Image (cartoon, rainbow, N blue to C red; front, top):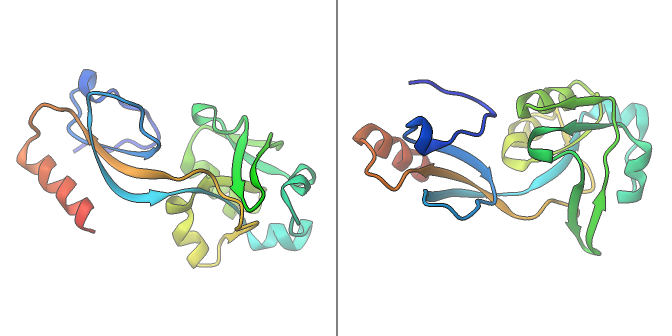
Amino acid sequence: MKIEWDRYVDIVAEGVAVAIRIDTLPDSTLIARKLLSNRRILVTAPRYLEKHGVPADIAALTQHECVVSTANHDGELWRLFGPEGQDAFSPQGRMRANNGDAVHQLAIDGQGIAFHSAVTMAESVRLGQLVQILPQWTGKETGVYCVFPSRPIGAAAKAFVDFLANH
């Protein structure tokens, strides 16, 4: 079994049985099974906050280093939803990456504030490697999905999807 990270796969053209996508899914002929809900959250390392302080609001983010994801234009504008409605912020920072794992590690390393998937960051937050900041502000709700072609999938792929859905 070949596993690839952070590459958008054309499931039908590449003959892939199952892919996992974190986002709002566009209309397609693929079958999607939602595994769980997700939102982007603002996170950084405790040592970053010790050195630079905690931003009091969205406007204060302009005074901070941001770890910018360049995958799918995610880093160009952070759209946040909170108690005051919607706000948007153009992140600035010296650190940019087109890989979610790299963004995650840069945040853990104290290189700045990242706006990334809560599902992806959950374990690091639980372990205290990252701290969620401005928790009242998150990205729009998306999801984590198994997607597969409308053609019948094999028994192993079906068992994999069922396992993920049940756990």
